[in-house]
Structures are given as structure tokens and as C-alpha cells.
Amino acid sequence: MNLIDLSVLSEKRRDILLLIGRKPGSFEEIESLLDITSASLRFHIKKLLDSGLLEEESGEYKLSSMAVPIIENLKELVDSLAFFEENMGYWMNHGLTPVPDFLLERLEELGRFELIEPDEEHMFEIPQAVMEYLSVSEEIFAFFSCMYTEIPPLYSEFAKKGLKLSLCVTEPIAERLLKDCPIETKILQEAENTRLFVCSRNVNLPVFVVTDRFMLIGFFQSNGGLSNQLIVCSGDGALHWGRELYRHYEEVSEPLQSRGLKTCQNPETA
View 1 (cartoon, rainbow, N blue to C red):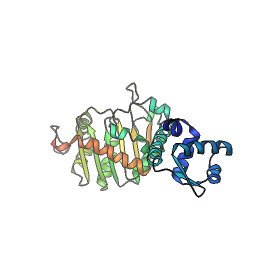
View 2 (view 1 turned 135 degrees about the horizontal axis):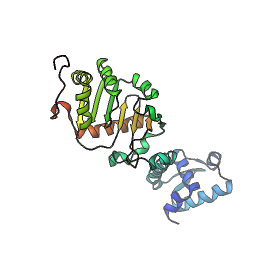
View 3 (view 1 turned 90 degrees about the horizontal axis):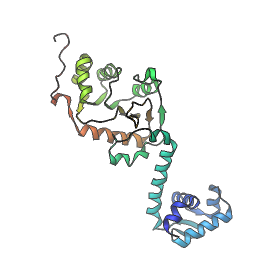
View 4 (view 1 turned 45 degrees about the horizontal axis):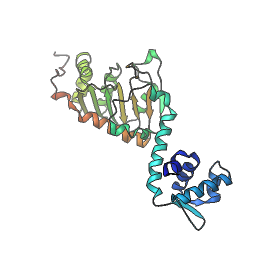
């Protein structure tokens, strides 16, 4: 029997290895923490001892030096599978191509998240739960390729309050901001703690926000339609992952002022 059969394909042995990887223990301690009979546990432990994945010392079982890197990778695999299985329907129906490969490989870092689903009448309105998160955030980084009517006035108010803002939009959205929301855009352009960027790439990511309190991301459906489901999470891993995603798009963007787009004029003198 090879190591893959021993450590991965057998759920019982996988559970034993992951448990001992967290904390070595005696036979009785392992048995008390797993849903397994004594006879079955003895059988599986013997297999793992014979394979060299486990060692016994003074009645306590621990991972062998060979097993340590194997179990670390196994834990990552199990975490990834659990992450996708928990919301399989969502991942199957949404396109993840906007996420670069180096972050797609670490999607499980989002951890547990909430799926917020506004009804169709309020699809372009900011959900109340998100507004509550934004109201207590001190720094906000956001990417948009869809025009949400509440965003310009809301973000201009944030800018007036001195919040640290970094906003990255696609070129069509930048043009609409300059044309349709000149007052709000001028406030954003002139605010000391605000940065505006334009991404010329065709990024199919309708909305993405990460702050010091939470992360929100929405994907288009696999068929190209706009989804009304938003992922919201607030764990440290998710916030770190979100900042990396924002930096990725900021790095392939340019400041609004350096683009060939017409900048805002004072509406009173235009």
C-alpha cells in the first residue's frame, strides 16, 4: 500500500494523522477524540506505524519526520476541499477568472463567509450589512467595473471625513464618473487621503471592497450575467487576501490624473 492510499484515500487514517499532527497523544486520547472503535483504531495505527508515518514513544504516538511535510500539505488539501464543498453551488455557477492564479490557489484563505443576496429590486443598492461594516472602517480599498449609483456620493462623504480611500475603476466607469458625477469625483480627486486609479484592462469583476474591517467581492455568473450574490467575510486571512487582490489591480492601473480622460472642472465655472 502506497503513502497516498495510507494518508489520503482512507478517511480514518487521514483523520488520525491530522489529529496527531495537531497534538501527539496516547491511544486512549486519540480514541476519545475520534468516532472510531478501538479495534479499528488499532488496525489503522498499525498500518501507519508500519509505513513509517507514525512513531511511538513511551505510549504516545507522534508524526515521523517524514510525515510532517506530508500532513502539512494534506491539511491544506483538506481545508481547500472543505472550503469549496461548503458553497459548491456558488463556485460552480460563478466565473473566477478575475482572480489571478496566485490568489486563486489560496482561495480557502477567505475562510467562512456570508453570502448576501439582495433582491432584484435592490441589486444596485448597498446592503445594510455592508453599510454597517463601511461605517466603522477607517481605510477602504475598492475596485468597480459596474456603476453603483450610491458609490460616488457615499465615497465622496468618506473623503470629506478624512478616511483613507483608494478607488480603482475600469475606464468606462471613470468616464461615467467624470461625466455624470462631476461634483463627487472632484471631491475624490482633491481629497488628501484619497487615490483614484483607472484600469484599462477588461476585468470582469463587478465589485470588490476590502477595508480594515471586512472584505466584499462579487463575481459575474459563469454565463456572463450579473449575480446578485455577494461574498462578505471578515477574518484576518480574508483581509490579507483582499489587500493582495487590490494591490494586483492597482499595479496594472494608472492614476486618474495621468490618463487621457478629461478631468473634472468646477461645476460652478464649467
